[in-house]
Amino acid sequence: MIVAVIDIGKTNAKVALVDLATLSEIALRRMTNAPVRGAPYPHHDVEALWTFILDSLADLNRERRIDAISITTHGATGALVDAAGELVLPVLDYEFDGPEQLAADYDAVRPPFAETGTPRLPVGLNLGAQFFWQQRRFPAEFARATAMLMYPQYWALRLTGIPANEVTSLGCHTDLWNPWTSAYSSLVDRMGWRRLMAPVRPAKDRLGPILPAIAQRTGLNPQTPVFCGLHDSNASLLPHLLSDQPPFSVVSTGTWVVSMAVGGRKVELDPARDTLVNVNALGDPVPSARFMGGREFSLLTDGQPQEWIDDDVAAALARQVLFLPSTQHGSGPFPHRDARWINAEDLSPGQRFATISFYLALMTSTCLELIGGDGPTTVEGPFARNPLFVRMLAAATERPVIVSETSTGTSIGAALLATDGAPAMSRGERTDPPTDPAWGDYAKAWQLAVQT
Image (cartoon, rainbow, N blue to C red; front, top):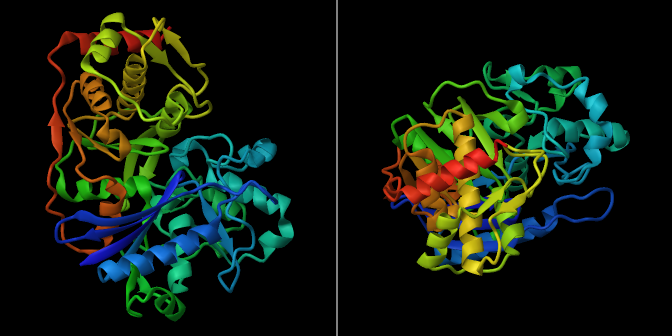
């Protein structure tokens, strides 16, 4: 079976073809995903994305016949639609700080961390805060809404005409879901939103075939099924839930680096350090932590390709050149610290890149420690292609790291919604903790520095 996966990330949008027989991506289309900065507030350019999706489906279907469609997107995003399925307000960009104008009012009604596993996050990172702000600022438009949809299910609605919601997105630091009771949180009833909540469906549910207009536009079979879809980090986790034995951890990398621990050590999560409870595709709570690692990498490297040699790595380790958090304030395990360099005089470009890679690995190691990560760690996404990140992560955690063989684990996980069987996962390359003590000494020096 060939599954087309619509994968809307915060930085890039993709449509990938996944061959379920080999669990491999066989084709990919990509576009940059940039928010619209115009009125009434910064928002996602859903019409540009829609055109990209339809063009990609048509193009890819000419290469290989598409048998099914699945969807995965970033979190902290939702849509308000009317009875015709049209947006009543633009889909708000979660980096917009407008919701903070009503922070005190929202804090008075949001549930505690103990109920939702959701920390209080800045800007629009709590989806409940977005809806609260939209209702207060645009009451007439909000009153026309007949459904609140999570972002994957907004795209499913456009493809099928069927409204639905799903737990991995509802449980992604929204304040809307109680992961322990598998039910809506007290906020939903307190705000009178339950009537707007579309039916909750499992991620693997077939919502229906594509609409006739979609079939005509793309050339797909009119009976092509569309699956409900799920949150992107949970898409990365799903193959491992189905095939790996706990304890293990999965690190999904992209704009956000999201660490998830399955069967790990019991720890008390600290909401002040951006730990949270996600809900996986099977409906179970998953201790998680994250920081904006992909964004930090882009800022620190200025988006330029980086080159390094072994001498650069040896020099950065020997000098213990350190970069300390954080470039992105307000999230991550050190949300209020100011970034700084140590021992960074006369760095070569290669030494600087090595240090940045080590920093990202050590931030990830901190996240894993905060959530009780244990067993091997699988790294998905762009950081899996950085051997310096992988090796330092193994050194800092003192556990093996497995590099995912796919360019994006989200596509494989989302495609698995179209099958009932457990995947025959091929394991990626394994990196054990380095025997050279310089790596472990470097990790300890960084960990000491962030404590002072």
